[in-house]
Length: 290
Image 1 (cartoon, rainbow, N blue to C red):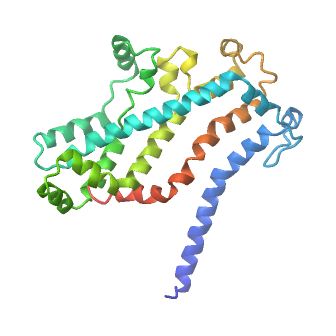
Image 2: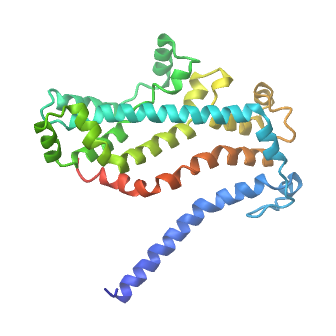
Image 3: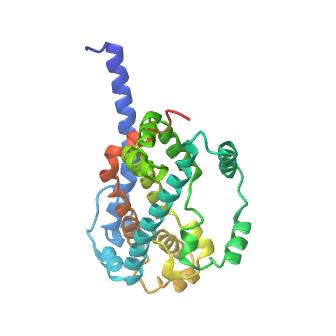
């Protein structure tokens, strides 16, 4: 089928807009990479744009040789895996029962869950609750409170709605129970949405630091993003630099900051190519039916 001239023009406009969006996302990363590999003198003279000037790997050597950085990265990776597994388990356990039309109180549970999307108690009540539960300064405070996203649960539930009920009915006739149906039918058919939501949860946990900032004083359990936050803050705060152990780091310069940003960003970016084939279909199919 040959497209008309106006159709080809529309495609070119869309391609140009996509190209601009790609540049808007790519250029800042290239700039950070160039700054992390450049000398301090070149950065001071503002000579670095998209290509390193005065190649220098000192910042990366400092980051990789300091146990503070490597442990923070390892702990963040462990925390991300645990949180993703727990969150996906909670999301499936919440979404799957709500697909049964015969579930008693189904409408009430749906309303109660949606209520939490619009109303939040706030930081102070959360702090007091975690204190009463003994979660403050405990690793569980970084796992339990955000283990379920209502938005992601709705996507999962909507995807489950799209699976033909005839498959479930056939399995029930053969004697399969709800758990067997979930593991034999629903989950195998839900790989796109499972991969997509896992990516959402993983990225959210990897980039999160506000909960650790407010509820975790033990620096041993600070994720990499909070360490990066403290590094950037230490540039203007001698007290923070001393507390976090950055004062002895040579430079605390833009080079070290840029290297730490790359150190904290690249690992999670490497996850995307593995889930790319599931991402688009998983993000859109769940919205076909409410």
